[in-house]
Length: 140
Image (cartoon, rainbow, N blue to C red):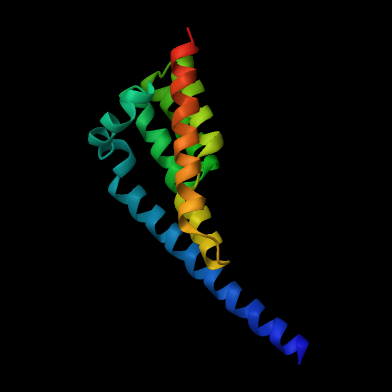
């Protein structure tokens, strides 16, 4: 009985995780095909300017927030090469993403486990914004 209950729970949780990851990767593919990260982020970049981010830094920030730190790091490397973002911007993006990466992916996975949406997202966003803002003011 206990093993049956365990395997039912395991299969249910595995199905939820598969569904969440499938949707995330499906969305990632759509974003890549529509080139959202290279053309659609510019209006959203204004939201990040108060933290000290330049417009060219918006693409890696949004990539990291939506798809995780590994994908964000790839976009950072690409932005350094193509758009020439400076060391300060790389530092700010890295600081922000270290605390606040994969908001959608992590939140979806932890919600499937029964976590609270508020405590998964808002404290991370607030702390990441605060530390990034302080870093942008201190860095010379």
